[in-house]
Structure formats: C-alpha cells, structure tokens
Length: 124
DNA sequence: GGGCTGACCTACT
DNA sequence: CAGTAGGCCAGCC
Image (cartoon, rainbow, N blue to C red; front, side, top):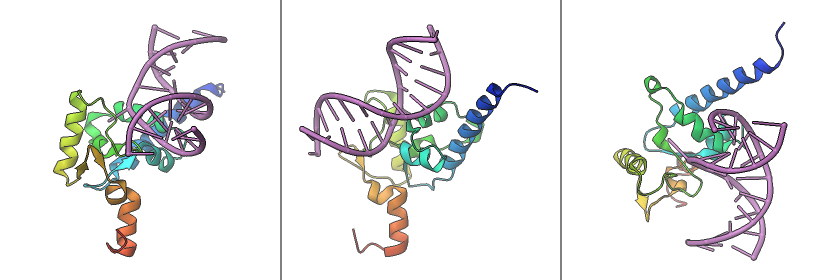
C-alpha cells in the first residue's frame, strides 16, 4: 500500500474542484466574497486559497471568477491593473453597481439576495 | 526544512 | 469610516 502523503494532494485538488463548483453556482448579477466561497467549500479559514484556486481554474470550465470579491465589497486587484478594469467591466454588464468603487454586499451579495426573496425590498 | 508571498478575513483603535 | 495588527493555508524558493 502507499503512504498517506499522497492522499493529501488528492484532497487539495478535490477542494479546488469544490471552489470552482461553488463559484459557478453564483447567479449573474450577484457576488460572493472569498470568505463565503471558502466557507461554502468546506474550509472557512482558507479565504486566501480561493484566489489561488480561481487562478488555477481551467479556461474550458467557464468559471465566473469576476463574481468573487473581498469582504470590503471591493475588487482585490490593484486599481492600475488591467485585471481590475476587466472585472469591474464584467460585473457592471451584469447589472452590479459600484458606489465609490465599492459594491453593496447587502444588495448584490448572497445574503442580500436571500433577504430580498424572504422579505422583499421593505427593509432596505 | 525555514521563510516569504498572496485576487484574504476579523478585530481593534 | 480609515488604518493597523495578527491570524490562516498552501505553493514556491
């Protein structure tokens, strides 16, 4: 039999797949934070790892990486980078609104979407 | 094996 | 609301 060290590697790859799946489930016009994706993937403390998983995502999978932002409601790229512009453009095309460079997570985040489904727009 | 890095998070000031 | 500090996890040198 093989040693247990190889199992760990498989486990990591398996987790990456979970991340890609979770991100792919994000509906258009909505966003999730890295922390939420990490939690939904079964590793609440691995928010940092999510960014790396997204970078390693295969092109053919069509993972909507742009729908993942940081907990401040902002894009986690440097503002002078092309990635920042690209992500902002993609989100705005889906109807996401930037206010002072930030996205209102109560409105476009997962929690906000659920709240509107349950309560409507009254408690805004 | 030790230390640095990163598309991060939370808590505190 | 903005800035700082400590913590977390895995990949890379």
